[in-house]
Length: 632
Image (cartoon, rainbow, N blue to C red; front, side, top):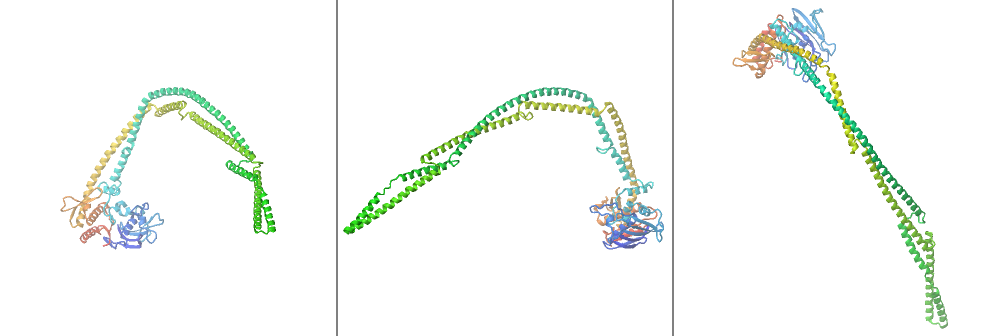
């Protein structure tokens, strides 16, 4: 097979084309110019795009990574030569969920389809290997020169060194045998552990059946005794509760009688208090404040006494008349005698008379005012005399004293009633506590708790008997259980024999795989060693491969081979390239060769090593088309 032309609408490629020829093709382009995209496009044209892949952390599937930047649907064509026929493959996208699913394969320059070639099998028909083998042999992606194992590649290698049958893989066969073995026993799971558990359970049930009859007889005797205890306690509880109810009722009745008596006394005291208050309200002074009224009346009585003294005082008018007569006489004497002293005496007696008359007038007015004030004060209290007023005050004070006595009596009766009421409440609370036969501290309560415990014990024993009867019924007939146990032991022996046979098969498979590896690995190592010597100028002469295709290299001067981790990046790339070329040489079909696609696998090499690697690729290009994408 030889690729002639590619046309792609794929990732950053927008309807771009590449042409190739036989032998070595070098596509040189700078980084990020689409070299890896062309490699992915070649793989997609041969094997299609897997639409089932999902994005993961750090990984994008091809269906997302290579969506055309222009927004156009993913599509492309590949012109190639296979079996001396020119063929054109086209893939296009109709639905976004199925990129490049639409496929056609026609003979170039015509519309005649290639018989039997479909989108699913085109790659395998043209290259002769599946996609898994192709990407691990003839397709060297950037940064992925190392070969990794896979069941597909194992089947291919097995076919090369044995009968040519590619349907068997050591890994798949080993995994299948181990799965069958795990089905029979894997730690505590599998058919054998399940049977062991069932046999242990059956044996345990048989052992339980052996001792259950004695346990059941013991429980039934214990149940009978517990029921007798319950009957005895029920009679004692009934009698104790009757006695306690009678005593509590007697105390309650006594308390009620005392409370009634104190209530009646309080009612009588309240009636007497009401009568005293009514008598005080009917008093002329009414409900006036006692102290204020007493002070006011005492003040008014003192004022009445003062007014009475003023009223009874004597105020004679005779001195004023005598002075006036003397004044007249002196005036007459002056007229007769014309004595100046007489006229002065007359004036003096006249002034004295006027003064005495004025004083008499004032005293008379004061007596009249005191009489009016006296009448006003007596009228205010509706009394006719101070004596009557004093009697009214004494009566009022006596009524107040009797009211105070009635209030004190009512207070005493009320306190007695309150004490009787509190006592009655306490008696009722005590009665409630005493009649609380569940949580109280009385004899009846204690007997009730003992009865509850006895009943609980009876129920517990009954439940144990019921559970034991249920388990006995569930465990079934001992003869049936013994028969089941025998059958399980027989089945266990058969499965154990199968498990042992699988262990022998795994050992035989491992030996067969080792033999296959011993036949294939030397040839693969020999070819890889030859390629490694060519690309390193003979410095490394041996390449040793493990089952998983991990490699070690040894120089002429080394006693032991070097692990890959100890090699430089460029030498490691050459080691992986040599192994990859050896796998490609041995794993790919004989006859018409498949192109070798290499994406920037020489970037870590110096000029000398690059020249040696190119010499090897030119040698390989004589047998198969080589397409090298590089930035150098």
